[in-house]
Image (cartoon, rainbow, N blue to C red; front, side):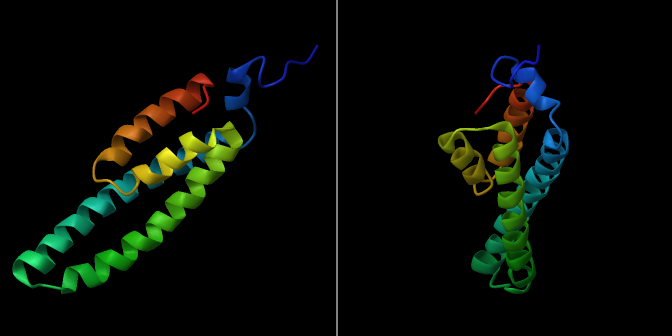
Length: 117
């Protein structure tokens, strides 16, 4: 007798692609978190010290990496069957300094436990 993902949520974690999607999400959550901190530092340099050079490099790089983060997060959300609200909250977490680190830990715990967001 075969069980569905709803009857055995832990089985969903083992589903093909979920582990890979989680790994990609985790890497990008950290990269985007560090990139966001670098962006804040570059903004301080621009507005506090009138040095625009760092922001010219960090800004576009962070923007590109955030777009990749959105794609990887959405991929994980689809494979883990998250709610729309849970997905949006995780997507927004990449825009607030330090929050992506905290949310990444919670997401990892829930996905590994087979829980939905």
